[in-house]
Amino acid sequence: MPPDIQDRPDEAPAEWHIASILVHLRPERSPDVRAAVAALGDVEVHAEERGRMVVTVEGPHEGRIADRMTAIHLMPGVMSAVMVFHHAEPMAARTAEEAATARR
Image 1 (cartoon, rainbow, N blue to C red):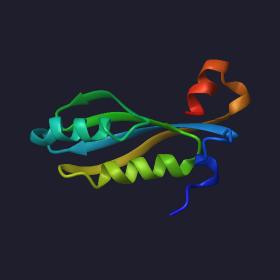
Image 2: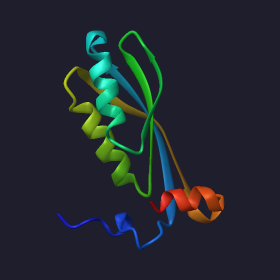
Image 3: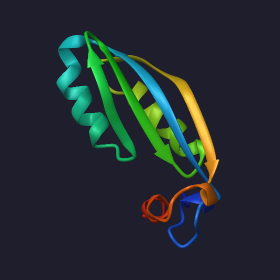
């Protein structure tokens, strides 16, 4: 499948999206899920407790957020992955350092 126009490295995204996802998982699978989530890229685990995990996802468009959320939902040991927060802002509002990181 060809990359989305917004995923092309030579084109700066117009917006930057961040979302928070609540993941319910089998507690005994926590180390495996944490490792698989960390391997996705653009995802960070912020909290974890007794079968729940809070992760954030960042990307240039909603599709990136949806792709990561679906990937997490389909991981062995995950019972659900639900978006609880989503924010988008224009790239012009980001600092130069944040914008450079977004282009990578």
